[in-house]
Image (cartoon, rainbow, N blue to C red):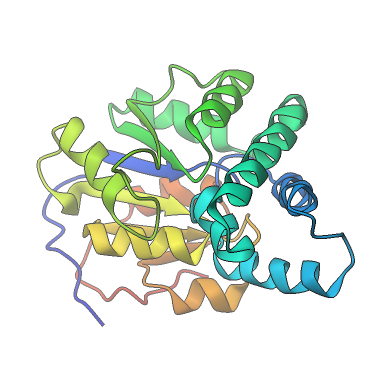
Length: 241
């Protein structure tokens, strides 16, 4: 287990995952993947669909195109399936709601002059549509999707991009919050001082426990208590229950 960076300064930046962390999923992503698989000719309820679903669950948190390329095995078909995935999410945007307390947490962080950023496996088009619907377009100092040379989670690219862009003094002053093992691994690879897993997404308890983390809590609503608590040396397997 890796020791935490020396926690000698307050958190300057909190980086959130989007779906399942700030926004209640309620099956939206699951249905979008079903539509993507159908676009690729994988019939719902088939053995092939079951195998694809198992792979998708194992790759939770990674960019959609990466996941579908792994499942389908053909880059052209995977791109077309990704478009179908995006269409499904965009059709569902008007039904999305925040995880209870998420908006309040964002406001409290802003009022305390703590910067916030959001990273997501969604494409930039979907990310922008989701944030616009939630009224959060101007809520974050940075909003990032895996695009171009920036790799998605579990690579640390998006987190490090936000840290560099926002001129944060130390990675130890960064907290990341996510609902998948992939999010937590990205936070660990980036060296974030706080790596907080939330149970509000679709990941299993065992998946979250197996990933590097400093805290594991029920939802983003529990974040203020973590930020207000004294920060002492610990290990990346610590779990707040």
